[in-house]
Image (cartoon, rainbow, N blue to C red; front, top):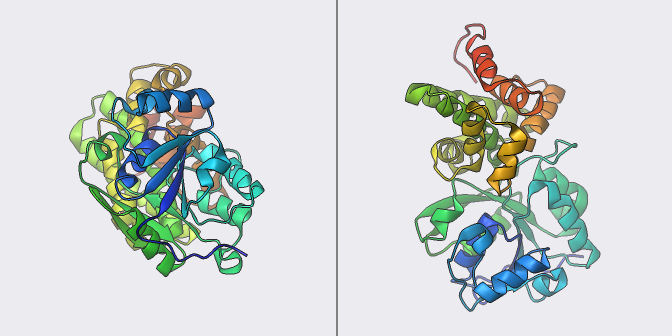
Length: 344
């Protein structure tokens, strides 16, 4: 049976798994209120962070405080923790859940990565359901953290608001309260599906927005793209059982707008460089960070075809990413679609 799910709101320890930019920014923010162990698989990366008391590889020279410890051993990172916050890439989520289970750990888990699992086209909550089981049966709660959030702004102390979703409302509220604080405002919801879909599909739309901006199509085109992208995202989410209201909130429209317009958006940068004629391989090699939208576009199309949801923007982005279609041809084909009434 799982450990008790009542979370301590003070004197807690949180294990943050994944020391990329977002994982590190969350760990640094949360360490202002709780003990934090920040885990990374790469021992060399961990050694460098320990020496610098910072994460120069991903987040510059922002210094860690004394409540943040860095670990490369998963068991050590989990020892004494009250909550796990997984910020590994979506492609590695199933593997980290298996590692956690192999250690006999049944702590509640929140994930903060966004995408669909490569090859299976499953959203993170579906992976969690398969690997951890139904929380109503196991007592081990889990959920998703998502919303408009750039690591570079959170770590600078700029105001940031996100949404935490879990099927159990009391757990969602407790976990949100635990993470909430300083410049990070955390709302909560029970729509795990909607929050998961919003976080995934917005990355695909950001690549489309980058292509549009890179081709000089202007503000009108970007606004239209974001709006129709939101409709596309909502259609996909509703088909999977999400609530419409979620897509009007932080994890839907909020995250979509930020990722399609913000200067720190890696997915938008992929689109900008595609528009300039660079190959995807060269773009990804030079990026230095994971751009979740690249894999997500392919997996969303795989899932959309299965459930019969029309996603024209996602289709054209995937054609450009996976099938060698030029950005110009993808845009022209999108613009050349048959006229139709505006609707979801």
